[in-house]
Each structure stands twice: as structure tokens, then as C-alpha cells.
Amino acid sequence: MAAGPTPDGGAAPAAVAARGLARRFGPVTALDGLSFEVARGELFGLVGPDGAGKTTAIRALAGLVRLDGGEARVLGVRAGARELRERLGLMPQQYSLYRDLTVEENLRFFSRLYVLPRAVYRERVARLLAITRLERFTDRRADALSGGMYKKLALACALLHEPEVLLLDEPTNGVDPVSRRELWALLGEFVHGGMTVLVSTPYMDEAERCTRVALVHRGRALLQGEPSALIAQFQDEAYEVHGGDRDLLDARLAALPPVREASPAGARLKVVVARGARDEVAAALAPLGATLAPAAPDFEDLFLSSIRRAS
Amino acid sequence: MTAPRPAPTAGDGPAIEARELSRRFGAFLAVDRVSFEVERGEIFGYLGANGAGKSTTIRMLTGLLAPTSGTGRVAGFDVRTEPEAVKASIGYMSQKFSLYLDLPVRENLVFFGGAYGLWGKALARRADEVLALADLRDAGDVTTGDLPGGVRQRLALACAILQRPRIVFLDEPTAGVDPVARRTFWRIIRELAREGTTVFVTTHYLDEAEYCRRIGLMVDGRLVALDTPAALKATWVPERLLVARGRDLARAGERLRGLPGVQHVVRFGAALHVRVAPGGVSEEAVAAALRSAGASDVAVEGAEPSLEDVFLAVVGANGRGAEAAS
Ligand SMILES: Nc1ncnc2c1ncn2[C@@H]1O[C@H](COP(=O)(O)OP(=O)(O)OP(=O)(O)O)[C@@H](O)[C@H]1O
Ligand SMILES: [Mg+2]
Picture 1 (cartoon, each protein chain N blue to C red):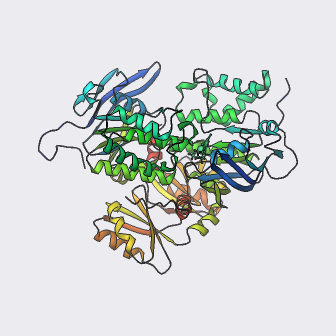
Picture 2 (picture 1 turned 60 degrees about the vertical axis):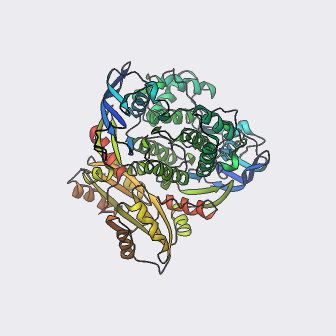
Picture 3 (picture 1 turned 120 degrees about the vertical axis):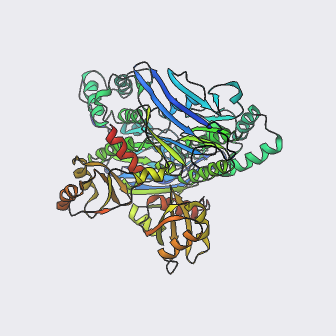
């Protein structure tokens, strides 16, 4: 699944190539030399704090943002080129459906944009409606859907035409945990069938499901690689806090410099602390009746620790 | 130019009370005889799948949408007959909140303050307070549209608490917010609750729901569970929970379904959560099965269930299976 030459031996171009992307909006530097490559058939994740530049990067790859510097290419072609129209799909973060059309009418409208044969359309719509659990609501107007249902309809419209390369900007915001899993299973199937997917997400469990991820911060890539390899290089230490009162512990932890972050993990707290600071933190928590137990770091811990160090 | 008075409340009953609260849209029952009480100063989480009826419940309790039947009382006022008094007592951050993106942050507060009858020096002072509380001290002059999403949500929260409401309704306040900003947001929510504000909140991030004192879970318009996080876990995930980590687990996970006692296999990021009935397979047996199905670096250990396990169990038990292992 790693990037590199294709099995046929040719040096096929990367499905998506971002090379030194740069873009300013007035005083704001949105992209500051962002580079990454996505091989064909990869499910590549872009994660990072709000405002890190993920949306601008995706828009640049779709040819919607003029770059001040660097180069964005898709399937070997300059981003925005006409010939990519049929081959590239995009679901922007701010998408719009026809609010006065029903679920079914919206799907039919978007399918026309891609001239899908009738039988193909019927099969795909049936599957997408089942996965988004919207099949009971096909004649409901888009403006009468709940927030998450609306989001899922937009996603279904974007997935209808099954392009070679799909760009998804935070597709699962507001989507419930059951549907999120089903949508990711579907993305997995698409990728298995050869599609390339680039997806940004604020959900770190989704980042763990990507073949590779780039952690974007202030317009550049802070880290990139396979999630498990990145976690293996985790530079801080993760612990679960046992015993003690959670609110008191939270307040105490917030005041300790080596503590990068504390998060609820079930009924307990999980803390990420600077390497070597275990004893100092343990000593501070002892009077509160709490002890530290080593915990396996996950991608969210890696995210928190990397962003805290970089800020 | 008087100091803002705390918002009105009537009586000293529960902060929020729903009795058989229902709402129909045509033939469709969006909220179906929901009953619960929220105590003063409590953080109450309201969870459920998309379309379960969370926002519809909130719109009824905030006096914005009339119930079809049943009653709701908020701060002691009846949501049907005294919607104006309800609105004056609460703060509300809607799922689709709107701010004026071309205005500076502070101007947005001034605008919302005006709508609540705050003005002059009192408004300026209160604006400073909520900016500090929302961790926006230095952002007053920034154009709202230039703020990252997570910071914008905090401004929406600041607007919602301008009039010092005793009760706030937050409908998915952290949707799309990154992990660092979500933690900041929840520190603010908990600070509000410590000061005595009642918080009614919805979210699809179940890790943060751990901070709720009690949680209601909706499925298809009905409230099917309501309890503390610990009690929900004990009731809904009574089985042993095993967490499996390693490489190439997804496909291998399919093999676990036939093993004795294995009831559910669900993906959590790169890991699998396996629920095993009493007397079922051991950790070692699960690890061996995964290895023989092609997974490597396998580690399996017992764990306490999270609220996301509860969510999947409740929603699954009510006819919307969550068998997405791959
Ligand atoms: N005006 C309306 N006409 C018809 N149906 C409606 C209307 N408003 C809401 N509904 C339906 O009521 C149900 C509940 O919607 P609601 O917005 O309360 O869900 P929710 O639990 O907040 O979901 P989400 O997690 O997606 O925000 C949905 O099926 C929705 O389509
Ligand atoms: Mg909602």
C-alpha cells in the first residue's frame, strides 16, 4: 500500500501530488510549503487543528484555489485541468443541496451531472440509501432532514459517480458513530476496488483507519506516514490515571507543565506527559490518591502531543 | 445602564422537565412521548443516531417549536404557554448557529447583546467577561470569518451565555472541532456547570460525553435509556470487553464471530472491540484466532467499556445493527 512504482513497473504518476503548496489570504498564511503524495489505491488522511490549511489544500487539488507557489497535480495532470472533470470527485466542507428538493430528487439531480446509466444509478442509489439509512426518507425534502441526515445525503451525492480520485473534506462531521463506521466500510470497499481517496477529518479514530496520514499544522506537514508507524515514534508517554476524583485531578493536571493533555478515557483520565516526567506527575497526583498506569498511545495522543509541542 | 440581572427563573423545581413530550411532522413522529428531568447545575448529555429527535426535542424545550402533545417546563416556565419567558431564561447554541462573518468578534457580541436588551457599559463589561470565559480574550478585533472553525464555535457559545442564562442548550457545539479545541471547549462547559449553570448538550463525540453527569439516549424518537455513564455501561455492556490491537485486524476480525460467546466485533480506529459473554473465549483464544486469520503484532486485553460501546449496544439493540467490523 506504500507509495512507489506501480506493479507494472512504470513510474506511474502519483494519484495526488502536492508539492510545496503555498497560499496567503491577506495576512493569513494558509499554506506554507505543504507537500505530500498519495499513491493510487490509497486512503490518505489529512488531519490537523482547525485552520491548519487542510481545506485550502483540498480546494487547491480540486483546482478551486490559485496557488502563490508550489504545484498541485492529480493523476499526473495539473489540478483544475478540464480532463480531470470526470475522473475527480470532490465533497467540499460547505456543500449545498437543493433544500426544496427531496432526498430522491437531489440524488437524481446529481447523477445527471455525471450521466450515469440507469441500471448503474439504481444499484448505487439503493446501496447508498441503505448505508446512509435514508431509504425510509426518500420523499422528504432536504430542508426537513436532521443535520446529520443532510450531511449523509450530501455524501451520497458525492459518492454516486465513483470517480478515480475522491477528495472528501471532513465528510463525517455531525454523522453518528454507527453511520460513521458504515461510511468508512464503504470507503474501504471503494479503495479495495482501486479508487484513491484523500480525506480530511477531525476524528482521530478515522485517521487510524487510513493507509497513511499527514498531520498538517500552520500550512505544512508536521509528520506523515502510516498511522501505526507514527504512533510507534511517539515521543511523549501516555498513562491512565487510576483512583482519585476526576475533577480534582483534571484541575491539578492542567497546572503541571510536563502534562501535554488530559482526556477522558472511559470513566478515567488519560494523560500525555513529556518523556521522563512520569515521577514528577506521579508525585503531584499522589496526594489526590491517584496513581499512573502505562497506557498504549493512540493516534489522538500523538495528535495532541505533536500539536502541543509545535505550538 | 444597570448591571445585567441574572435571567429569571420561576420556582425551585428541576431546571428542565419533559413529560410525554411529543412532536409530529405530518404522519411522522419525530419525538415520541419523551419524559425526563434535568437537575440544576447538571451537565446532561442527550445522545442518539442522526434523526433520532435530539434537535427537535431541544427546539421544543427552547420555546421555538410547539409540542404536538405533552409538556415541557424550563426554568419553571411552560414551553407551550410561556415561550417568551423560556427564551429569556436560557442560552441556546443551535446546530446551525449563525454569526456575522464580516463583523469583528466583539461586534457579534454587541449585536446579540442588543437582542437581549443589554447595552452600553454593562454590555461592554459582560462582553469582556464572556470573551475571557470562552478563551477569546485576544480575539475581540479579529474578523469573525477569519477564525478557525473551533474558535468560531466558542464565539457562538459566548453569544449564547451573554445574558447569564441559568440553563444552556448546546446542540452539537463541537461538531467538526479538532481534538485540542474540543478539550478547550469542554473546559469551558465544565466551568459553566461548576458555577451552577445547567448544561443540556448533544454530541457525536462520545469521549466527551463522559463528562456528563447523566445521559439520555434516543432511538427513533424514543428515549430508550437514561442514567449515569457508569450505570449505562453496567446495564448495556455487561459482557466482558476485549480490545484487540495489531496489524491487519479488520479482515481477521470476521473470523471471531463464530467463537464461543463472541457477541459483537466492532472497529474502533485501528483496534477491534470484542464483546464476549460469560464463559466465552479467553483473551489468548481471541489473539490466536486473529493471528491464524493473518493479523500480526496482536495484543488482546480486557478493558472497561466506553460510552461509544454503550451507544453501539443501545442503537444495535433497537434494530439498527452496528456490525461494521470491516
Ligand atoms: N420540518 C420537518 N418536517 C418533516 N420532518 C422533520 C422536520 N424537522 C425534522 N424532521 C425529522 O425529524 C427527525 C428528527 O430530526 P432531528 O433534527 O431532531 O434529529 P437529531 O437527533 O437532531 O439528528 P442529528 O444527529 O442528525 O442532528 C428526522 O427524521 C427529521 O427528518
Ligand atoms: Mg440535531
